[in-house]
Image 1 (cartoon, rainbow, N blue to C red):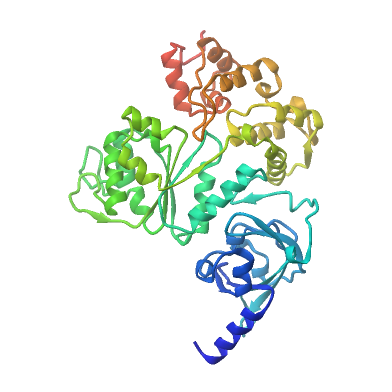
Image 2: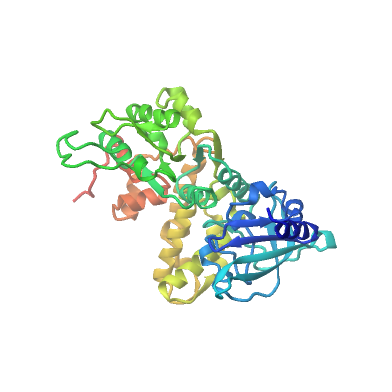
Length: 460
């Protein structure tokens, strides 16, 4: 390091304000001693990481973009100092005044951004309610509840490591969003993010899809096929519904996790692969292990670091934030100007149990945008199963009838034949809609219909 560089480092470390600099990709390149004290992140932990490590509540008087490429500062815009909050390494937040300026090269192009953070807590500042500060969004996940702040903390910790991650939670809670957030915050963010739904394909098709196959490996294999693991090399592969894997595929996945190599179907040559595995399930995998349906060694290989996601009914304080988030998004997509929900509609939404979790809430508001011409969404703009007592009781009683909720959700969601028929009729025998309302996979609806001897088509 040159003498000038040494003097610059000494000058930055002597400043009482936190100072850090990012390049055009949003990667942190400088981090002074005050930033270490302010955030708890040592320079070695912060350098090379994306600036979203700090999870600022606001930037340019709007929510800080999750992708630095969308940052208006990097477009050369000026910004006035703003009061915001940043997250510390231990998951707590600290109020700061944030100032930022673009760093320009000799030719006038923006080369990066330098930012200073003044710790307001040391000045006796106390937070007052503010629309920006009361909303929390992190990688597409929205919430201000203690449960979601813990999820945000776990995502940050997971992104800073290379270990395998197991995300658990009911259908519709946002497991894929968590996986994407881990990828975007990690060192692998420049690599691919590949998603595989393990419940969507049969064993033979899934094996070929995951690991690829050689030409002539089976009837119809007319050319070599690159599997998802090979495609994800250098990045992250997200294995959704990992609990549905067959024993044969479980063995092959275990080999990849242990030896970092695999064979295409029909080949004997081992292929090395550098992939981080993030898996998700709505099942209780430990119970599957005890039942002999899931390998114990694979379970512990996947569950090096676990992130349980709470169901929406356990964090209802987040529902107003989520409705505002979806209303804003649907307004932008449809060109409408919906102002929000009426008090009566919000009361109904808060009283519902949401068996399909955030996905069901999103679809309910999408339904409301079809029926509501403008102004506020009223009770009759909501789907019938949410506002009609008999349907709401049917769905929510089934939710309460199961075992107490754990990180995997209720252990049982039994649906009696009569209730399943009632729901099928209410949905015009649309099995996908029934699955959405029950918060289960569509294939589960088909299996229950077969088990309960319900015809696949409505009676003539």
